[in-house]
Image 1 (cartoon, rainbow, N blue to C red):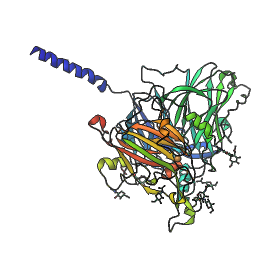
Image 2: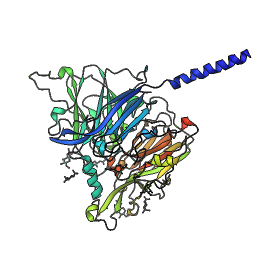
Image 3: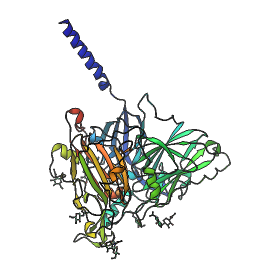
Length: 573
Ligand SMILES: *[C@@H]1O[C@H](CO)[C@@H](O)[C@H](O)[C@H]1NC(C)=O
Ligand SMILES: *[C@@H]1O[C@H](CO)[C@@H](O)[C@H](O)[C@H]1NC(C)=O
Ligand SMILES: *[C@@H]1O[C@H](CO)[C@@H](O)[C@H](O)[C@H]1NC(C)=O
Ligand SMILES: *[C@@H]1O[C@H](CO)[C@@H](O)[C@H](O)[C@H]1NC(C)=O
Ligand SMILES: *[C@@H]1O[C@H](CO)[C@@H](O)[C@H](O)[C@H]1NC(C)=O
Ligand SMILES: *[C@@H]1O[C@H](CO)[C@@H](O)[C@H](O)[C@H]1NC(C)=O
Ligand SMILES: *[C@@H]1O[C@H](CO)[C@@H](O)[C@H](O)[C@H]1NC(C)=O
Ligand SMILES: *[C@@H]1O[C@H](CO)[C@@H](O)[C@H](O)[C@H]1NC(C)=O
Ligand SMILES: [Cu+2]
């Protein structure tokens, strides 16, 4: 009897000991985001821009790995809006992911919605942005994930940290720009400036005064957290006369290496260390386009900030003018060799746990298309090349957002007619993807099709660029997951010979892959997060034209493998 009591007592103590870490609630950070129009003066003109809390860029959120964020978003603008927490894995909290009509209906003007989620196992730089129409042009900000409380970086602690958000500015209302493109069927106007922390910098008219200064002391190390928040453009980035030591990307640590140029696709982040080992002076920090599509128009301007050694600065109120900054060198716009040399050098810091024994072997083409002018439609609505309308697709399906339900709501509540589960796992028509593609193959089919994945499925996905209309580098972003990029190359992926290039040892873990122009990338992940997850090109113009699809990942067994119930304030359509 006594032994039985002891045994039971022991069992209870054991259970309690195990339960304590589960019960200890993570530190929660509460924020209020008010989406509202505010006056923003750029390039000599004042615009009524949509912002968060009147700030452009919006507020920076800082938390530790393991903490919870609770953000109440109130919409006081005249457009529908949602907010996406870019790169946050959202384990079991898919209702907080944000893309409109995928995981929620929009927050309508006058309404609000509270996003609640926990960061688990991610450290570094992420960001947040609107995920509705082109609002993210001005509605975005940084989300810094510091190391777990009580731990530190896997590299010497830098003396300073600076956030550099690269953005894209239109001397117009970005919503008007996309609406005009959708009306005409032509490509949207290119932007008028790139920005660093919202400022174009002194190469642009009326912009010198606002140029961002990054003050430094000699002989210190500074952690630069660089985010490409531009809407439609991959960017090269460099700092005059300074080497950049890469230590992380997309909130995963990387094996350090040194370079003078980095390339970021929209959606990607890169953490770099820079040591101020140069003569005290002022040095340009600069970014401009990596434009891979031949002959396509793009914004060819250069944005700048200034790395300023304090000894070289003109003291406030002193009668002197600061010396001209040292010029930064950037590659030519179409320097694919430099872009590739950078992306193929990325390695995870530790040995990676790349899934093997693949359950789902997928192959998706990604690229543009042209729709013939539909009967009865006027010529002024078909101003794409030779009287067409621009389109884009994955596996020839041009993604169309639902209008009266989100995909996640429709899936969980069994609402029919919102989507079909027919997204093809491989192309229905095989062709020479990167060759001279016959015009008969250029017109994709519109559809709201999803691909279903079983909980825990080990997925390999080949992302194959096409040369339909034009080959181009596509930054493909997957929500709800990080994935390993195990290989990339040019031309058509060859399943017999290209497997030799697979890196299953230390590939980088990211949430956005740069699919090379006229080439391919192979990614792997385990489908361990139930929900509805959009995968799309992070060039908003391509997403607008349909370059996306949705994975619906089923629940596994028990609560820990199932999505949480929807929050009570989830917006309805
Ligand atoms: C796009 O550019 C054209 C040509 O410069 C201009 O006339 C038009 O107003 C612009 N559209 C928008 C929405 O700004
Ligand atoms: C940028 O493009 C404009 C207009 O197409 C052109 O006039 C200008 O020369 C270009 N600038 C550079 C630096 O290539
Ligand atoms: C880059 O563009 C120039 C013309 O602007 C062209 O001569 C060159 O062939 C292009 N390079 C590549 C790699 O496409
Ligand atoms: C448009 O038509 C012209 C003349 O027929 C042709 O040379 C060109 O290749 C066409 N462009 C596209 C994108 O179809
Ligand atoms: C939602 O819209 C689709 C397509 O427009 C329609 O087929 C379906 O019946 C609608 N569902 C509801 C519940 O209104
Ligand atoms: C591409 O193929 C078309 C016929 O399908 C042909 O007319 C054209 O000359 C080819 N272009 C090139 C660059 O080979
Ligand atoms: C896409 O589907 C349309 C309609 O069936 C077809 O005309 C076109 O050839 C297809 N293209 C490809 C690349 O499969
Ligand atoms: C906002 O979203 C709702 C669906 O939730 C839709 O009915 C309405 O048309 C949208 N309004 C605008 C201005 O797009
Ligand atoms: Cu794209």
